[in-house]
Image (cartoon, rainbow, N blue to C red):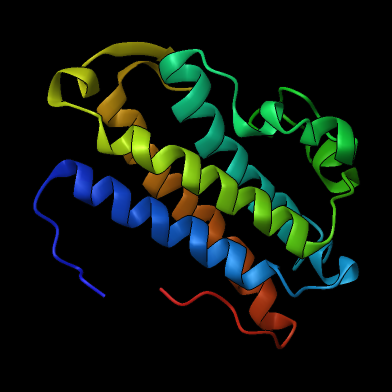
Length: 177
């Protein structure tokens, strides 16, 4: 695998692919019970962290940047899985997050892979001027798209770490960093 990074787009592509692929690979064979496992009483489930990563990337790159329908909406997954149509978990209370019921790992993993397939061509086309456009982003206020893309990488990594700890504690192969 080529790890050479020569531009900001290479960076965003590489680390977005890495995060989404690692999440998808690590959840696709989990049972429903394992998907809903919470490492601690104050932790979200493995499924919630995976869903949140996929939804955040999908929503920021499709809807926030372009006002296009995210893959989530295009595929009617919210309806198929009886999950929030718009919410991606950012303002959710712990009780709401803990109560969510997710589909089997292979289905949620496929959504993550579909998001990745959809966002990579968009990231490839991002110019420096495009990345310097400021937009209002909750909860960060007015920020450049470049800042938001940095958050895509760091925020995904944070939730990937939460999921990896829970998956590893189940004795399953967890994502490696």
